[in-house]
Amino acid sequence: MSTRIAKSNSPMRKLPRQGRSQATVEAIIEAGAHILGEKGWDDFSTNKVAELAGVSIGSLYQYFPDKQSLVEAIRRRHLDDCLAVMRGSLREGKAVEQFAEDLVRDMFAAHSINPGLHRKLLDEAQSSESMRDPNSAFEAEYLGHYTAAVAAYRTSRSGANERVAGMVLSDLMDGVVHNAARRGLLGSEELKQELIRLVRAYLTVAD
Image 1 (cartoon, one colour):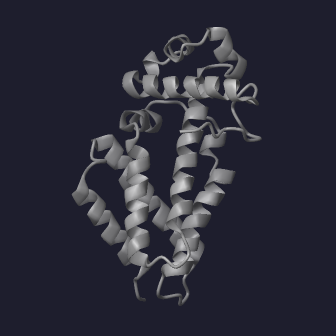
Image 2 (cartoon, rainbow, N blue to C red):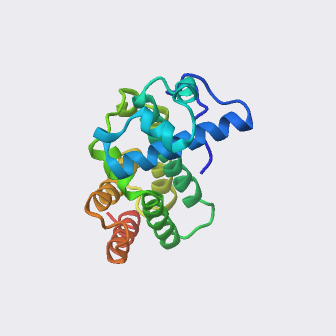
């Protein structure tokens, strides 16, 4: 995966501008994700990350002032993956059955890249206040995609609040997928099929 953290609210000390520095940052993030996923928060340290990444601790500190900022970069990359799933799922002209299938399978796939990492991000790693902000730019775009799905596919509009329905659909997806990660069930075809049916039924419900 490419480095996707060059944003105004980036946790990094400085942003990589050239190919070599971008490769260094990517190696650091990859090493950090591996150690956090395999060892957990208590064994996660900048020294271990630098060693695995093959860079000096000084090089790591050029970009990340502490291990919390590195965890935030790892978390933001995962959030970018989730946004990419939503953007891809809502292609124009797609039938609701295909939308539900693509959304569920692609979201499970995004969490299956490093399932141990997602369990640690959910339950062990500390998160910054910005990551918990329900009004963040990420939350606004993420919920916006679910709201757009409701607007595109829900068959009954009488008195429906599309934003509220989008939040329900988002929470439904996040709850099932995150708990699947916790339970080691990201590979369960039965669970995916059940969630696909649930998403499809919610979007085609008649009042």
